[in-house]
Image (cartoon, rainbow, N blue to C red; front, side, top):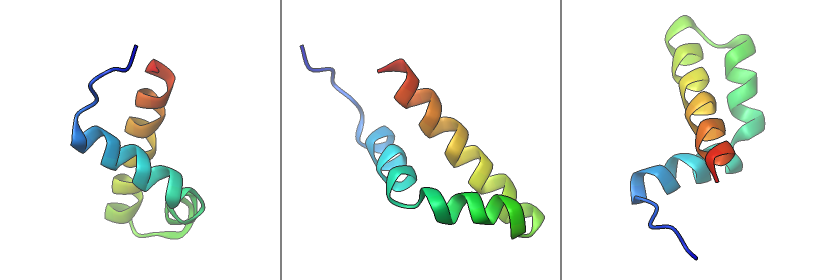
Length: 52
């Protein structure tokens, strides 16, 4: 049975999957704001992927 997944959730997961390496590099080498945004995207996407 397919779940109705909201568009904004799918976009977050797709962005994470397409840009995983880049996001991990930002976490290591970016400024504080960029690191926080990358960490939040990674965290949210992993939560969503683990739910399904």
